Image (cartoon, rainbow, N blue to C red; front, side, top):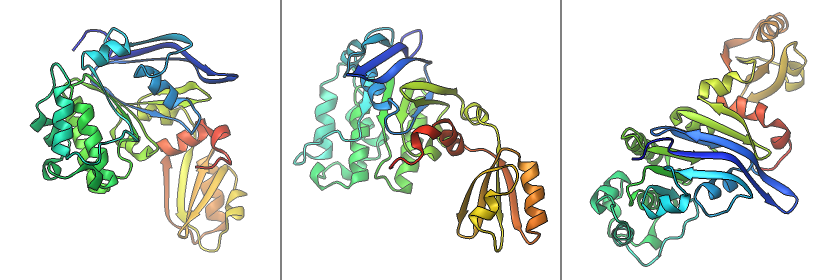
Length: 302
């Protein structure tokens, strides 16, 4: 493991014609951190990851990984990547493909350790073409670990995994990071970022709009969430309450985002005295994400 940051992006800019996909991004990440890279579609996450991996050359700015270029880090086995759509040879078994990739690295993890860390012990003899979506993700994770990297970059790592698979995956990531290694993951599962990331970097319009611990990002957006069962109330009725900014009704339970939760709860109880199961909480990461990226996500398709 090298001194200095695990990786650093300084003034990173990338344009495609008249479109600026990444606009002056500067991020420095220390060893041992688990960092979530978040943002709506078109925010510049994928282009930033491509430049970090050396797959795309920036128009301006600099990328350093372990003190050198991304290519040098890959050549030294310091940088591993798990891409969501990485192809696997369909007629090769899990054990064979892990062994093959391990053999290409100068100082790899032993194949047996790679298989154990990725939870593939029961799939060693299965051909990759016979794997489920979640199982393929675990194989991609194993291949990213093969070179014993200091930095692991993950693109939507738990897509297609079931609940047990996700839990086991994140346990393995925590174990990996506990050795002083660094993890950067891009995800649409905001709950995963909230539960497992030490730090969140939120992008919008190609720029970083929030960077810090989950609690710090949530604190960047003021307000509270008021939840209650409100018999007889419709969304429009609740939206008219003072202090309420947005309303959702889910299975008979109202969820109100509030700029002024004190005014909202007083008005709610005055108008709907039969309201029950009342709860007021700070905004979660999802609400902060929506607030900080509202002009991009409003009315957009998923």
